[in-house]
Length: 179
Image (tube, rainbow, N blue to C red; front, side, top):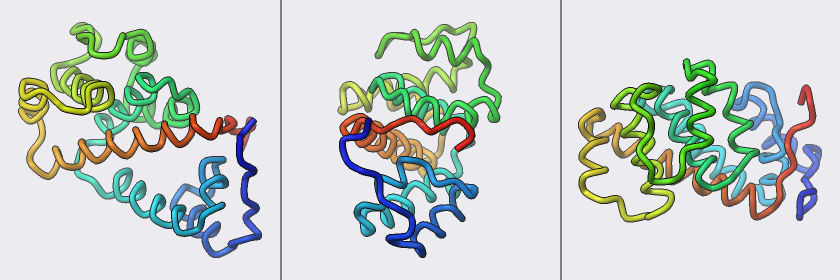
């Protein structure tokens, strides 16, 4: 059970409408919680919309980074929320299971993940666990992404660390089936 009550959409219908428009018609518990603070909800919506919909990092790698952050931070809500997106981008059940079982900062299995995916996993792990990314980890990821994409990948990992910490600190409830 969430530690703070969810806000009602009727308290700020314009914000609720914008959230639904930018989130495919859905009002997730995350946004219902954020609506307790309209300025925070507005900023969050703007930032996460930019990361999810306006960046040049291919969506497969964005979702891979998000899923890995969820695993490392033990944030099941975040993992479950992004599972459909990860599958849509082509991640297999074997990859998703390996991602769940892989200890933080361990080398991902080469048979399941290509070099670019392994670099993204290592970068997400390092940013999440160590904060200070070692030069070899950064350089490995930078082999696959240009300057803009490295900024976007870094912002994605940072933002989803914020998301998982928010979700877990407030004990966010999973979405009801069909929600």
